[in-house]
Amino acid sequence: MNNSIFNKFTPKEPKFFPLLKSLADVSDKAAEQLILYIENSNNSLSQDIHQNIKDLEHRGDELTHKIFDELNITFITPFDREDINTLANKLDDVTDQIYGCSKRILFYKPEKMPDEALKLAKLVKESTEIMVQAVAELDALKKRPQTIAKYCVELHDIENKADEVFQDFIINLFETEKNAIELIKLKEVINVLEGITDETDHVGKIIKSIIVKYA
Image (cartoon, rainbow, N blue to C red; front, side, top):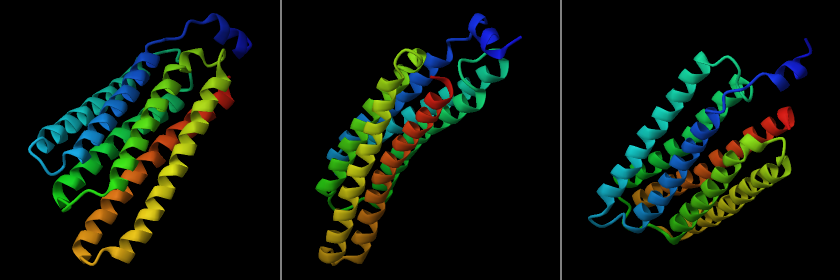
């Protein structure tokens, strides 16, 4: 039997769409907490906010494991199993990177968080919001592939903006910061922050490859 005819008439488990959407939501909530953490890194609220991010990171791991388990027991999946697994892992990587950033701020305790840190955190939040929209549309991939592709382009544009903020900050940091230890701390924090937008851009690239295969 022709595979396309078989796929057309065989029901596919829709449970993966809400699970992937939940994973994206976790990243978005973590990004929101990251902004709060940077704004409150030097006051009494910081520990609670960091714990919130840690709890979200654990929730992301739970969802990723759930998706893996479901892939092992599901006969027909909406997309290739490897694509679902890759997308789930990369969505979880976004939350992991956000948690990694908050840990560095907690460990290094910079004297003052630069304005660029907040700018990057807001770009991260913007990208996770778009990521949520893109993932939410996957169950209508064949109906709205152009809409989803547009979200992927937006994720790449945000990554470019974050890269510019990072480059300008590093140039200024080496020109103005005289405390070598503080320079190392800030460079590491800003580098990880910018790296989160690399992860969201990677999510967009995975989704674009799914569009090419299935739209």
